[in-house]
Length: 144
Image (cartoon, rainbow, N blue to C red):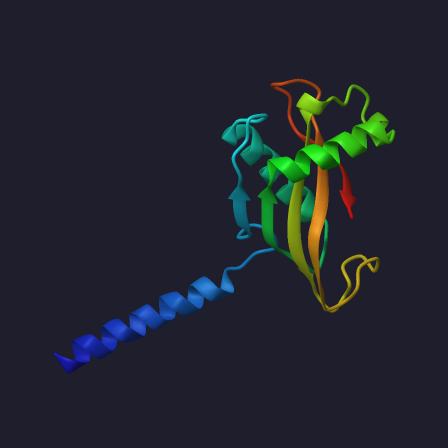
């Protein structure tokens, strides 16, 4: 009986260790989708997946959290469209622009060299635009 319990504990420990090592850049980030009157949950999830795909180009970085906060997104979208940045993608409108917020860690390489090595970036903004209500999201900007 003792051997069976010992064996079971060892198996549990192995699974725990395997789970810890499977953390991939951006794939296991904590995703939080706040309530929205503007976008469906599916639309927001699609924008998150698009952002995660773009984040893969941030070599040596690990996405830890990404979220949608409608109040923040609306303010940032308004500024983006009013200050001329919306012209980056022709046809950018309030209904087809979303801003996500994220936190991520930078490894010792500093990403592509433009990020501070061994640091954490918080409240990093991701600007996404689509050409229509049913269009695919495209990341058109990021930063603070």
